Image (cartoon, rainbow, N blue to C red; front, side):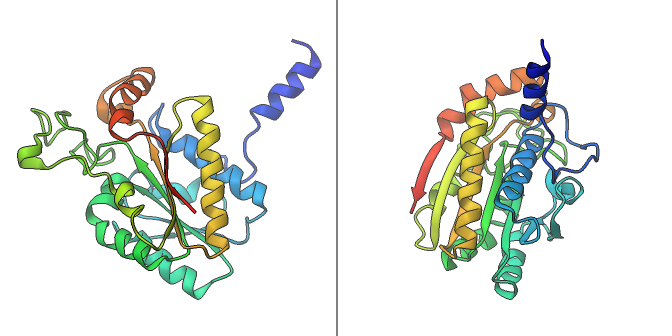
Length: 252
């Protein structure tokens, strides 16, 4: 490798300026770290470091404020869209977004999510869907797949007694207040690039007062799934993506 190759590699793999040097607490192979990098890159590229306020509730992402160097507000479990609503209405010149997991957004926070989106609040929602409660022991989540084994569904999720996987972004896409509803992933380089573009669009929509944007990221939880990072990526592609297919559900 010559000098030019080394310089090129440094440019490709340079750490985003807004990503702090704090060692991440996420498990090796977790999708959260990748999405954090994308958020930091997008905010930096837009030049909105001083215009952005993130809201992180309870869950694996509760410490997001430690990693991305912007203003953050922590919310009670599930209440991030309500907190973001207040912040945006009081600071209409700011770009406000939430960063939520499936247990937060699609379980305890279902009401806040649906009503904020139905009102068309000018916020962006980043939704991490790994089909499990990763932080608290691997319990069944609203997005857990049929027959998927978790600590609270040891024989697999039975739709007859436990319901079906909740496709909440599909539901949100039907609301008039939603301008963007998209489902992406970060398990391949191409997928990472597409997810970054959609995060950027969601943030731009929030600043342009177009309504609510939600970017779902179908993700891995190799620790909760008890798999290696490689196995988790493969399992997600084979099992989750057929249930939660990537693509735009609404893009106005």
